[in-house]
Length: 399
Image (cartoon, rainbow, N blue to C red; front, side):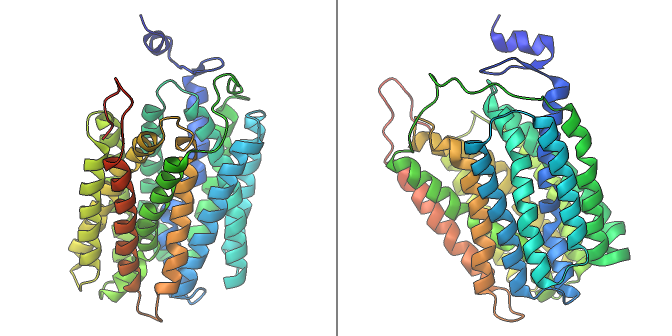
């Protein structure tokens, strides 16, 4: 019987190093991560509402989204480098409460205050996200637990988005929305109490020292560029709906329907891991995204706008786990793969930042052209890596 089978029978999550975790401890660590990303799932609606209430301009939407995701990515990367996985319960509880305060402060802030507070929120979210990343990276089957995490994250964001669409936003607008995510953040202290107090240090004898090789850096750069396009379009969902002649209620509906599709996409990716070639997934996902963005540039009916956004969400979430095998193929030492998450977050920040430059007054279709250019650029880079890859003797080429 394998170690994995023994772990499954014992009801634990088996770790490569250190003791195995109980199901409750693992759920607690994943719950902290879900809490860290919850607000980002409804951020397009929140920022769109702030713009509709004239508390932000359309260009400010991209700036605020970029600052939050950028500080989140930097915080996650630095936490992985500087922090030891100790006192995780304390970090989780304190971080949840600080995040609640930041969300509460956003509810009444002006444009300058919103930018500053969301930057602080990103730092807290990044540290909280480090906890599940540290746990997942130590498991024997990280891709499986990453899939579980994506599914739980998307489902939680879906529930909140539905509440936003049918109740919270129609009643109280952006202020009520940020108060709601503040309450959710405070509630996140509960799973933090269940997560493990500490994780084992990685075995120095097994650790891979040094920076990634050249092809690893190219893969990380390709990841950042490829992800940027989707991040640019996502934060401008409500302005795109308005420009298509649709209302904010359509954008809110499109968001929660997309999150439902993302749950399905994450579950499908978990089931298909190892059974489909990553480059094929990239080609299909890129084609789907480009088709959706072309639709967004047209004056389409509400049902088609909602359906197109759902298709985009499903494709993006299905593709996301395959960024890791792409990076491993480029750098078999896995040094680059260790930084794939940070590259994705930085790409998600770069997209809105560039989108803010592409917006021209009330005309926001420039973000669609920007997204198409960055996606083609990222796809070209990863395709070059794939077609120039030489598998070591005896190892089948990854695709």
